[in-house]
Image (cartoon, rainbow, N blue to C red):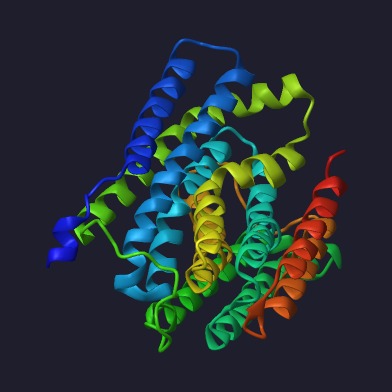
Length: 358
């Protein structure tokens, strides 16, 4: 009891994060409603999402010890993917289908390659070889391979000119429903608290569960709200900067929309909480492949938006499959080091470069 009363609820860094997030949201609102230039409005709204992500990261830290890495990763990823869900919905409403398709693939690539790689580099350089839950790593690897393969099949059917080409919309809806059912079946295993002890470097939580979950929800909701302003400035900013829709979706929108996982995962790895970092980072691409992409397919049909199918370009599909295979090979042994992380990041930069010209 004394340990709880002796620690303040909010330390100085908490107050900086809370204040910075509030200021960022206000500035993003001013940039949007005061008709600032598209590039400035785009940058300011992206910064607002990123700063709100820092608040989510702090909230996740305060939840980790109580729920275990699996449940924490699922909760954080569900809230963390809200901004991208809203960004994609607004983009479909604006007819930016190529941006949405690239953003979905780019989000998986960014988490599997860039964010996971950066977490391995930061954690490895600071703490040496980091241990992961090998059983959880195998489960995540199987789900990722299965979900990405399911997403790739409609694209292969299109590329091979099979009879399914005439029914791409219906085919995508069927695949979407199957993936959502698979996600529901995977939840019990994902939510199960692991048998391992908490990470040795995890600090004692200062916030009660209600406060941590409340701040998580508020920050994620605000990030989703700011995403409307983000998308409103996206197309004019792309024109002004001469950036293609594919590159904007694959890199810019994917990283901004997943800022929460980007920051949280690296923060946890830097603190030596490798198991939580792994769960947080890799739960996001699983939810993108099993939940976000299928949900957007159904939402686009149900609400009369620009129709989204699961047919992607051959290069996007190839990059997606190669990235999943590499991430699986690196993580399935339940260990990570900085060189493996650097390898993942190197592949991400090569993929991003391949789409620089569109």
